[in-house]
Image (cartoon, rainbow, N blue to C red; front, top):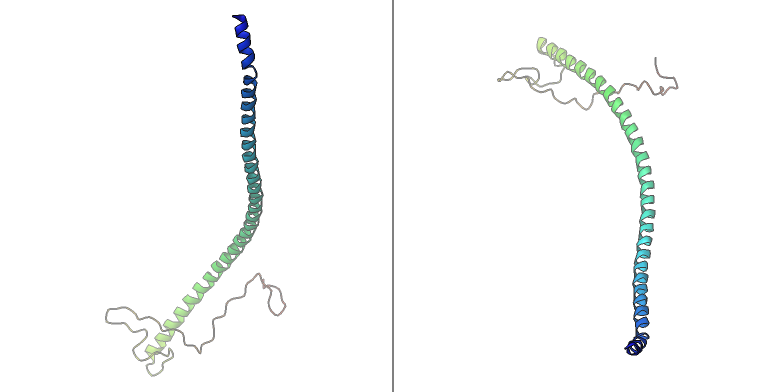
Length: 161
C-alpha cells in the first residue's frame, strides 16, 4: 500500500506544481490589470489637481476684482447720498419758486410769468386736486451739480474749506 501511494503521489506531483504556478500567473495578470487602472486613475487625479490649482488662481483674481468693485460701489453710494440731499433741497426750492410764480400769476392776471396757458397751472380741478406742473422748457439753463468737496477746483485751487 505504501508503494501504491508513493507511485500515485509521484504521478500527481508533476501536475500539482503546474496548477499552482498557473494560478499564481493568473493572479499576477489580474494584479497588473488593476495596477494599470490605478495608474490611469492617478493620472486623472493629477490632471484634476492641476485644473483645481488653475481655478483657485482664477478665483483669487476674481475675488480681488470684486473687492475693488465693492469699494467703488461704496464710494458711488456715498456720492449718491450726498447728491440726493442736494437734489431734495433743489426740488424743495423749485417747488417754492413755482408756488411764488403761481401766486404772482393769480394776483396779476394779465402777466403770465409761469408760461402756463390760462387756467392750466395752480388752479384747482373740479375734484379738488391740484394739476401736475408741466415739464421745464428746453430753453432754461441746465441744472448744475454742486462741486465735489473732495475734488480740486478746475481753476487749480484746492477744495473750498
